[in-house]
Amino acid sequence: MPDQTAKDTPYHHGNLRQALIEAGLEILEQEGSRALSLRKAARKAGVSHTAPYRHFANKEALIAAIAEEGYRELEARMRQALAASPPDDYRSRLTALGWAYIQFALEHPHHLRVMFGDFPETCQPDAGDSFTLLVQTIAAGQAAQAIVPGDPLQFALSLWATVHGLATLLAEHKIPAIVLNGRNTEEFAKACLQIPYDGLMR
Amino acid sequence: MPDQTAKDTPYHHGNLRQALIEAGLEILEQEGSRALSLRKAARKAGVSHTAPYRHFANKEALIAAIAEEGYRELEARMRQALAASPPDDYRSRLTALGWAYIQFALEHPHHLRVMFGDFPETCQPDAGDSFTLLVQTIAAGQAAQAIVPGDPLQFALSLWATVHGLATLLAEHKIPAIVLNGRNTEEFAKACLQIPYDGLMR
DNA sequence: CGAAGGTAGTTGACAGCGTCAACATTGTGT
DNA sequence: ACACAATGTTGACGCTGTCAACTACCTTCG
Image 1: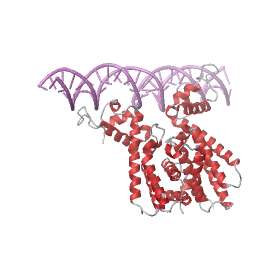
Image 2 (image 1 turned 90 degrees about the horizontal axis):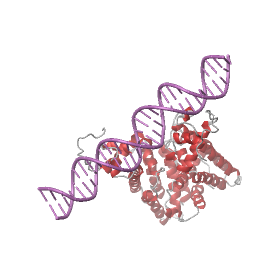
Image 3 (image 1 turned 120 degrees about the vertical axis):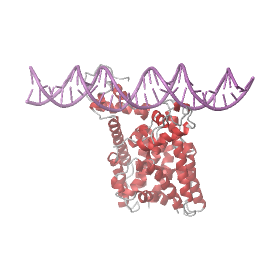
Image 4 (image 1 turned 90 degrees about the vertical axis):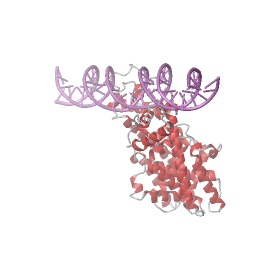
């Protein structure tokens, strides 16, 4: 679907803010983060090149909004993965969380970059809910005597780092081919996660 | 030191390629990756705005060269850390490798972003040597019966992911303040690393 | 109903960017 | 000495983010 023309846009767009976010998302998927520009998003939404400034203070603000969209999607996937995994098998539950994260990264590498890239003000609170999900899972595992005692925040961050590192390295194709060695990405990634799990499980 | 003027630059610069890399590095440190431009680097090196094209095919090529510089520095630091740690204590050796990586990330966050960012063609081979260092350390630990048997490449990647994830999250200030909780970054990061180590050590 | 004012969108301008084509200068090898 | 290759310069193009000034529409109050 090409750019909007002057068909159904009677001067006032209706919901330009959301349209710009979606246009930006499309650009991201199709052309990557380098190609993401305010003007292109505006063109895609069928408005003039400065119309976005009525909804976003600057380019960064649009990017931040796109990133937030990503945080929401990521959290939804993680929540879903958790709901679909056995309630008592904490290793499975943690694996499900990690794999959901990595799947998101593989399907939307550009979106991930925007979420965790250099764009400031996109700090903690955004990924906070997903992180909390991990902390709670660990705490539950500890309550069930399945996970070693210790600061759940510390444990969560360690696992988060492993998953996040794996996700970004996979998404940016920074994994040496020798390491992957033709293996299925899913089985490979999950195998990587077992190592810290072995350190946490009892 | 401001831009070069027409003092000591007798038309031919002498070693413009390296000068541009260093100029780019300076811009990176001082103004971040968003501010890095061919024209600015050229200005800093005291040449016209298209002179860089005699040494780099395009902006990406300059960035790739800067990234390579980073890979070299990172590898040097890791090698140094390994040399300075006890030869038989494999937990210490792995911790030293990880902490060297994280220190580099904290001191040069923008450089790290360029090394592992979206700039293509900056793939595996570059970080390869540092990665090999990790693989060798693990293999040595296995030979000494200090590390659990298993594919050292797999183990290395898992640890790499943890360290890389921690490094990027710290560098981008994506660690929720609650987690850090006023703790010393070094002790905190090292504590995070102990979890996968517990899974690997015997 | 009609004027007032705010909200949302437009036009035009500016400087900075990456890149290309054409040209100028310098060093080198025959 | 001269041609040639390597290196650097000038000028142009279209793209970008952003600002200022202007315009169209909606709402709301008199």
